[in-house]
Structure formats: structure tokens, C-alpha cells
Amino acid sequence: MSLKPLMLIVLAAGKGSRMGSDLPKVLQTLQGKAMIHHLLASLVDLRAESTLVVIGPDMAAVEAAVAPLPTVVQNQQLGTGDAVKAARAQLQHFEGDVLVVYGDTPMISSHTLERLLAVRRSESDPAVVVLGFRAKDPKQYGRLLAGEQGELLAIVEYLDASEHLRRSKLCNSGVMAFDGKHLLAMLDALENNNAKGEYYLTDLVGIARDRGLNCAFIEGREEEVLGINTKAELAALEATMECVS
Image (cartoon, rainbow, N blue to C red):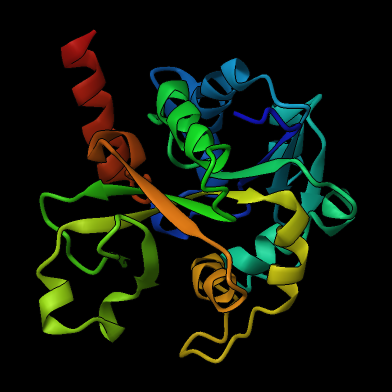
């Protein structure tokens, strides 16, 4: 297994308007600690060469909370692909592995992320590896479309999925690992021809396959990958953690 340098990109630019608070979402507290600090604690074991946090404009509080980690600013909220593009300067000439995670997923474990990276570094050399999960209630999550050999063919948004695919419970968590030598060129190929006019990181699967590159996925536990978007979700997770502690 090839051990390349690792760059971690933490997406933390969300304002968290559904939280009903002026405090940025990733700074909402869980068991007395900001959500993003739970995530950052899990990242330590990965021993990354660099960790970069993507924040929004006027997020000095987040910048201070993650210090001394460096931050870059996503000036416009134009989707996950746009957020990773904010790290363009750091990605230039970087040919290691790049892992993209989310500041509002406090429960993800280092073990799961290590499994994801192990597949990225495997002999099949996938340019993109996605963390999927089996949802109890898939709702409107994007679905992972797997091939006969277990490879990842596409991430299909719910509205674009066939009735057959919608019955699948294999969903996209958003966490992705990339071969850094391909990532910047693939980001530049992203288009925003969709209802929201945004650049979706999930579209990189199709771009990679169009270029003859392999894509893969692993499955994690639903409890690890659920993002926290509302006060009710935060309270429910807090209660769950208290029950198991």
C-alpha cells in the first residue's frame, strides 16, 4: 500500500441558519465542546501532513476556534465543490491523498476514515473513494450506484434517481477521499448546471469515470456520518451520547 502525504480539508463554512442562533453551526456545543472539536479530535490519528479548514466570510470565531490550523475563506456559498476550490493554492502541485470531511459530523471515527484511505491507497488506485452508509430512512439522500464488481458508478441525487434506485438504502455521506494529482483538474471541470446553480463535489465521480479513472466506496455506520443541522438534532445526539457514556 502506497503511503502518500495526506491533506485534510474540513468544510466548515455553513452559517447554520436552521439552528436559530447567530453562532456558526460548527461551534454549537455537544457535551460542552464545539462540534468541530469532536471532529478534529478524530482526525489527529490520521497523522496528516496538513489540515485546512474552509470557513465563510466573517467567521472569525471559527478561525479562532480551530487555531493554529490554517483557514481559507469560501466567499460565496456555491456548493461543496466550490468550498474545496477555496483550497486551490494548497492543492496546486499536491499529489498526495486528499480527504474531505465536514465540521458538522462530530461522530465520525478515525477508524472509518482510515478504512476509506486504505481503499484510496489500494492497488486498484481509485481517484475517488466515497463513504456511504445504509440509511434506516433514506429520505432524499443521494444514492450510490454500484457496479457488478463493487465499483462506484455514480452518485445520483434523489430527484434524479429512478424508482428502482430510490428503493436502495445505500446513501452518500458526502465524505470523500481523492488522489490529489487529479483533484484540481477535476474540480475545474465541475459545472453548475443544476437547480441551485451550485458546484457539487459528488459530480467528481462522473468526471473521474469519464476520464477513465476508477471510483470506489466503503460503507460506514449511519450514526457516524449524520450531519447536525437543527437544535433538535443536536439535542437528540446529546441525549444519545449521555445514554452510552
